[in-house]
Image (cartoon, rainbow, N blue to C red):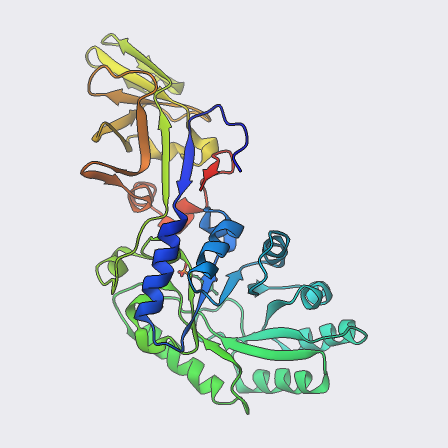
Length: 370
Ligand SMILES: *Cc1c(COP(=O)(O)O)cnc(C)c1O
């Protein structure tokens, strides 16, 4: 699987961790609640086909992605399970979706009308999930009238079949439950307008799955926590079962030198040694997703935290070592060494963002090893 890689910088993905997260989730959910494994954005940076396969093997019933192209990639990668495209699809995608048995998300009647026209001479039925905007304000219908006209259009065509209806929570990872409870009620009122309940009624993302077991309905859409990461610090304090982290990022010391007091390091010369310092260079930089804002971030070497000093370059950066260490010594950027662990959350705090953004920013240049 691994292509030639002369650089020691790698992201190792433990597919067993993903499997155990799915198994623990299934044990926690009611027996008739399905797991939809969310593998959008290349499986949150972990590899879409590989993580989809692992999640399905562990008992997920379906996978979900954000875009039509992501769904097509999974089919090309040999994933034969049901795939839901959760974001908008253009009507131009309808016929390929039908052909490849990809389920699309629909929010309005005109989409149904236009795609029905495109599908009139095709065999089979296009599966759709209706999206309800219960308070996220992104995509989805908001009124009973909109739902009614969508159902009317579906009724006019024998090429379109309603397989599900769903909504998405905006604040499920926060401590105040009221916005999530209100969204859930709004959603359920809309579902009750359906003359026939579709096969899958679903609402919960990872946070809602972990914090609101009563909202699980027919399926949950489990994204970030599939990879072992809690959606927020608050959620992390309330986990009903342990999550196992799937990714570690490691490299090696590529160069080591003793830099005498008063010497500067990296672009701009903004770091100056205040004594004779052992400095290690590691082959990872902002082109790998190790963003410039992570200057000062620590890495683990021999179980010890040591800081990045000076500006992070595109492909390399420097670490202040606590002592002389050999070239080739393992450096952990994300993961555990002994008692110490560095998690995506730590980078997220340093950069003023959320772990989601960090995970999907680990660039393709770092090979994923399974
Ligand atoms: C991304 C996404 C999810 C998964 O969210 P997590 O917080 O990662 O679990 C679920 N549903 C929709 C509609 C999404 O866009």
